Length: 373
Image (cartoon, rainbow, N blue to C red):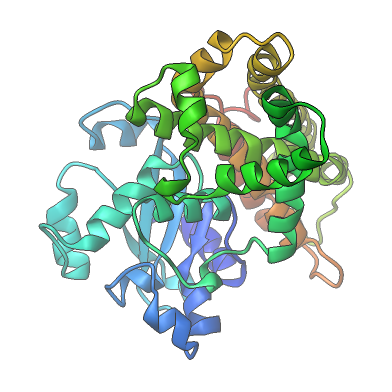
């Protein structure tokens, strides 16, 4: 690891999980005496259950580590000293060449070990957002202790109400306006948010003429679209606040000319990229809105069927984009909240570079966004 990477790792030591970072070391430090954490861990390997897992945008020199081309990988970091992350850590990318021998050497697991299957499930997600993480694991029959998820019961209730409002036109289409529609809407919302295979809406699957595999994958992504739509709406004010704060945050301490120029340019470029990425997310969500309106307003299921078939292909990019925005908002809230310490030019450069990497487009080389502006 480079010195800059080590410093960023030290920052992660103090932060909670975000859509881009699953901080299992923090979970361990806060819940190691919780019987539920011990009874329902994410991983069976004690060392792996104290690792840092990061959705990492690959740099050009890292692409050859994989058999197939990809832009984002799941990075597992094992700290050298969990009490002092400035010492750095050993890392491996899930699915890289020689992955299983590396896991055997680093964690003593290999072959058919269930932890490898769990890592594969995490790798298939576009982000480590707690809702999607929970849903993905539940689909595989893995029920984790609640301490792994930062989404509160209050937020889950808010989302349930959001989904109820979202699917009300579908219920109305099915049974019309009536008092029974109120209860039906809540039941259907609960079934959409459920990961229990018994809650598959068979009538809808048959209407859309999808086989069970296509339908299950499409509905999982539909659930993700609904969640992302809720998240974008919930974060709208904070996104605007962070974009504004980027232009106002000031550093303490000496900075050379190159650092000042980088930060000045970065304030403007990152603010614009956050706004553009938010707009791109909204446009992708509009594809769902249009398809859903075709089903519920026009009574034509073909567009929604096509959406469910296309959703898995759009899901990862949508997750990359919104995950980057969620990470920026979460980290900014953590680092610059009330009573936070002053930031040095060096640390702010680290933060800007981290944000830049997350926001980089799929065809962009991380580290060039601000410099090329």
